[in-house]
Length: 440
Image (cartoon, rainbow, N blue to C red; front, top):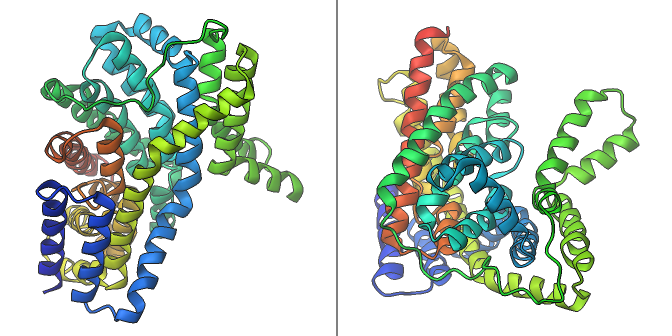
């Protein structure tokens, strides 16, 4: 019965948004409350679940998204994004620009959380789209496929790291095997698959559009543009590497490195630097820069609410115990442990929308079976990571970020984003199964 309720809830969500054009945030809120009641959550606990759902997802993302939008808006309006786009097009040519963006997304995605990487790279995608009149989805999907794969497969992302710890797997081997699985997955789901999406037209997108520049403003150089736009990437890489280079740091130094390495602090530092390097040093007044930041926040307000709505639905699924109940049922199936782990994570992901929750819940269920079967723990980590990327749809915050930033219809978002994630997930499983023939 709980599974029928989930299916009906998701169907109602899609109907409200697509057929009746109800605001996505309101649709999430209404459907989540109805689902909570139907799943037996006490009425007095429902408001707490709603609040916890918003807090859980927005606590991590709000500052990152807001500061990222500010940085992206200034990078775009200052002409810095255009400078970077010109360099990339000159290096790869417009014919192969997808491959350049895919490589960029993969490199950036290894140290960055998915949300940060998405916010940082979307302005770059649209700067190329505006300049060279290319389809946004066709150009952008390879880069975002690379970001998604690194998020699900590779340490040091939270879910793979947690799984490595749970299964006592080797971090280095998991990363090496993960790279072997990730690269073909990205190529198929990115440049190859996106060739079928050239006819998808995104709606008007103005968030990162470069406006006509005031003649009194200077244009940043290529080096300034590149360093400022990618500063968060370099900061995160540096603070990640420092503990390994200097293992005997004092407690005070460790605290400073940990503070500076927090994603929200990294983004704040990047915005402060950009305010000078792309603003004040180019002749912009502080008032004008703050107007750019204010416009960026206005543009993403609804995106933040929609992501919050997805968090509410996820919390209702968790609080009702549906995800654990589902996992326990699937555990009884007579399937190879690597396939079973992938399947459990995939179905939980489809129900609750969170890749991290899906992977960690599946891990708790499959762990005794892994110990009994002797399956390579590194491969199980990758199998669960691949499964956690499957079935991305209306209950996934990443789905809504892609839809709203690219201004797509529900149909086109399912056709592009959801299919891309499914390809990545299936290719990941196939790669793991092939590795299992070699790695014991």
